[in-house]
Amino acid sequence: MAMATAAAVISRPSSMVLLTRQRARWVLSPQTTSSYSSSSFSHSTPSRKLVLYSKPGCCLCDGLKEKLQAAFLLSGPDSLHDVDLQIRDITSNPEWERAYHYEIPVLAKILSDGTEETMPRLSPRLGVELVQKKIAAALRQEKILEPLQ
Image (cartoon, rainbow, N blue to C red):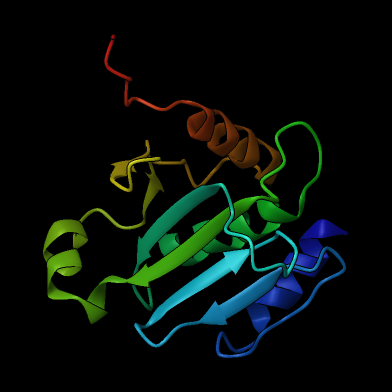
């Protein structure tokens, strides 16, 4: 059922705000980035954030987007319901294009200090449940250490 819901989200134009039974959303922002969150529509900021660098026409990017959207709809101990995913089109920013041209899709997590940390590449062969678990585990790890006092 979650896969069917995710497929419905993907097949629609990205400029539309879409609702699923889990109240997920897909928003196109003016900076040619898309944002997807499966948290509720409250104005609170999700505690965990991811960025996906991709470009139009990239089949690996499209496949990962599809799996991420489906993974965001899954419940359980590794739920990603409080994660905000921003999708950035590298062709809209020369800096992103230089950095990620040969690497996309690139998934990065936003650390508590606002910096980005690139996550290990997810195999296109992974199932949705495993994608969810790997992302949840990566989000639990924060490499920034507090200084000792």
